[in-house]
Length: 59
Image (cartoon, rainbow, N blue to C red):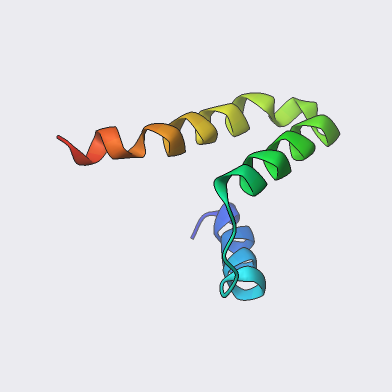
């Protein structure tokens, strides 16, 4: 298990029943980067991966 799995598990446990929009998610990601600018690159990579995930399914 990666260290990040704990955060993913907590997210799922606390908010797994909620419906959220991608706009809400993008705002939370922007807020996170504003608070923790050292994580700008990984957050940007995740956002790009999420935006293009449909492209991966076409292969």
